[in-house]
Length: 399
Image (tube, rainbow, N blue to C red):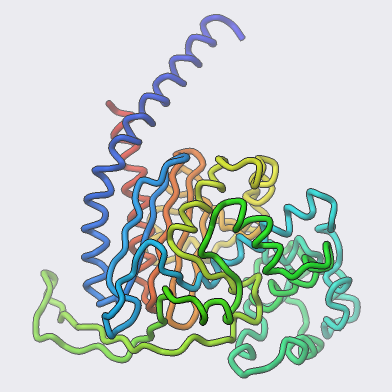
């Protein structure tokens, strides 16, 4: 490298470093405004309870909580209140599977029929072509959300699996995207076969305990026995308040109903079986940003976040679409190009709960939010967070 080029490189690095330092200091004031904005959005739709976290590199910038664990308003949500993560469970399953593969305890090119021998499809030999890596990236060739409806019907996994022999693939593996929950659950027997330990035990030993995620767990039994848990809520009705907003539209009050926790998606633990607090997710974000390499190595993080299959539908997501230019799925994570910067992201939704988590490797920034109600306000909050965070960096670069 010539002296002139070296000088330019050093000047560029110094400028970026200075911008990021200003960016870090401004994040505190940024959070003060953000907290008020999020509270306004949650209040508009009367969300019972919520919590969010912001991390920057190794530091937790903010953990904020709102509202109560249920509509009785007897217990406030706090930093350690446990929520269901729904599909935000998938990055944990993918991380553990890929970790075991890098340790040569299993192989991502193994056919899933090696671990689920009774899984067969209508087209002869098609099931044998689906490998573990295809499950991780939702590129198995199965129709989207295959047989998810049967999880609500109190069917056993064995009975659900037996129905797949009526299903024909919609494409060859790796040729199209089809989001799965039941098929994602097939990762569990592969993981458990690697060491003759339960899925929940391995997650605890390899991720939760090393990262001090003290409130994280797997399964409905643990969730129901914990004291500080958010209760699920579904929308009961919208009541006209008689008032109008600035656009002249009627303002309605959202009325939520507390419901019981359903066991359905807990049957597919790798897809939707993890429970955790917002503090746990803050620690998880810091690790995924690369600051716990003894747990999540750089090679592991790179493997997880390599784009595998294009997800065009994501480009049309409400609130996100004006910012996204590209979208893929990796192993357990979505990879978005958001205003020119990659964001590693996932969302989750089960009866009565929503969850969002994402991080930007280039900004060293992470954000997670949990709510105990089924509301799309979470999409608005997350997308606006990332838009404002990028704007903040742009302003610092211009200084």
